[in-house]
Amino acid sequence: MKICYLTKSGTIILENGAKQSEIELTKKQNKILLYLLENKNKVCFYEDISREIYDEDICFDDMRIKTFVARLRKKVNNIFEIKNKTGMGYILKSIKGEIEYVEN
Image (cartoon, rainbow, N blue to C red):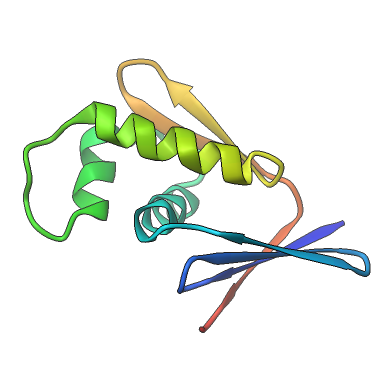
């Protein structure tokens, strides 16, 4: 069983038995992942993700979101299953292992 510790600073610490590894996320990748986790099994629309990751109102661009999520998927594909809902957004379908949040 994998255990995944997700820190506020954007580090994912994976423990699989005695083996431990870390994955560093950018601030935006971390915000997207946390938003998807909060809305697990629900469609997260491009515009809602955009509002979540930007502190100020900017012109919405779904290609930016797609790029951020594509890069995020490359890093966390073995832990999280993030599915595309064509023309709408993304949905976090499953988590492989246990997740714990760590204050850091």
